[in-house]
Image 1 (cartoon, rainbow, N blue to C red):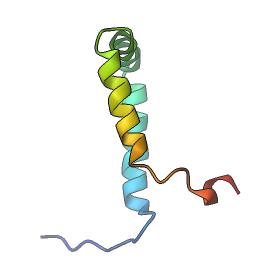
Image 2: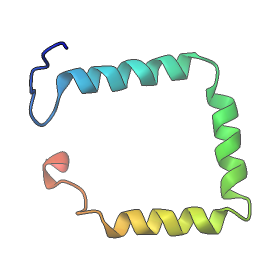
Image 3: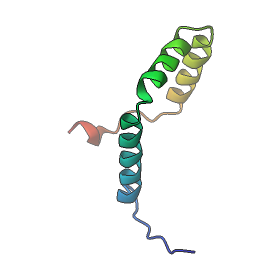
Image 4: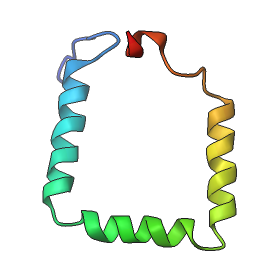
Length: 70
């Protein structure tokens, strides 16, 4: 098993992996379909469930990090 280095909070390798995956998705041509699927979901009977799930997630949030807006 390969040894992994603990990068601590703000992992550069995780950020790079996320950025690379996001870029690959945006260039894949799948964005319009995903956007259409999301639009359909928020305009469907499922919308109430989605709003409840969002509210539940926000209740667990500690809010925006004040360091973000300095």
